Length: 232
Image (cartoon, rainbow, N blue to C red):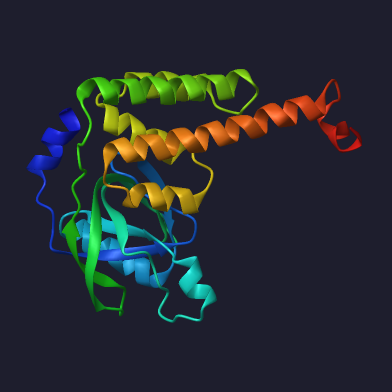
């Protein structure tokens, strides 16, 4: 709830600079570390810091790239974020932390030089489930994550404790997806899923599929060490 109040106090711009990254999907509230080194993005960062500290991170559209599309195509749904911390380095590069604010749709690319700028429209989640259903979805996700860890998945206990403490069921879901989903393709699909109940369902299915693979791996491994799994 605190984050929603903060978001209401931030004026969402109608036009933003855009960074396109392969395999990176930003979610609302998530903290994304970025290393800015390309000249175009250095200029974009400088402009953002002088204005509202806001820009978009968009995942590259791998399918369009493989089909030969030009101008670094990205998915049409992304997230904008606000620079929470920035350290400029002596060589002109910068390290920063970007916090996701909200999902957006790119309506029109208005410039490619010196960096991409796009007109955007905020995308609001569809709250199509009761509070009880959302709490159940939250419990299911957390229980699945705990089971993953119990079966050997490399999930730090601190991550689970953090997710348990997150205020808001949708916020917990988005942060879980950002932190724990290993597939950028599925992340993008879930970013584009505005229905909160459907987003919970899709992510639960992903976690269960991963859990089945983890159980199979443990069964095949038996009592062998990590280096001997191939001999089983």
